[in-house]
Length: 115
Image (tube, rainbow, N blue to C red; front, side, top):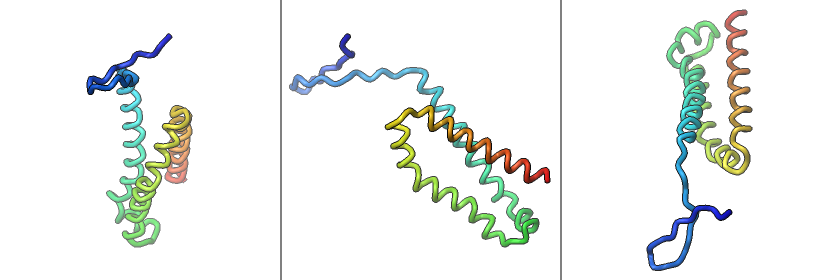
């Protein structure tokens, strides 16, 4: 069975694959957005209460704000390599690994707060 092709009308007889836009892609985009929001919310919460965290841990406000800054810098640096790996390999595998890491770190944060 041949794939659907689209013929360009630029005078050439070049045929390119027809790209179908599925509604499922919006579901994947929404899941990705929710994961990104969870990542940013966990780290930005410390910048809101930096004065309380700095007093509790007896550090300067700068170091509390630096934790969020390190996250943003690493996010920028790792965005393209991770995007390439997601494109090259099965993306659901990377989403599952990322979800597990996020929830594991969130549980560690909860346990530290309870102690």
